[in-house]
Image (tube, rainbow, N blue to C red):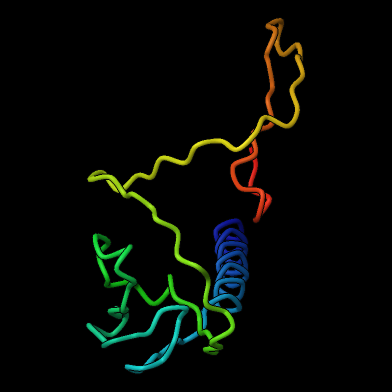
Length: 129
């Protein structure tokens, strides 16, 4: 009986800690038509779904997003970025060619020789793998 109570108390403490962590990250977001989340919200579709006005280049994407995917944005006209011509395939993938190969080295891992190459994908953002 004593062990059961001890296990129950530990489970309850663990669940309480997990709930506290989740509650710290969870925010009750609500948006209205006309608000900005980098794009303008056109309407509320459901209690946690919003339709946003996408640019013509992104017209083949579904315009409805869950509230967890959106963040409040204070609109500033100076933040307008030049639109790149992105070709999105039917399977919703994008081909991004590498810009440059920056570094390479050979390492021994688990008895096998492995070539490692650092690829620069976008110099402006510094995106590399």
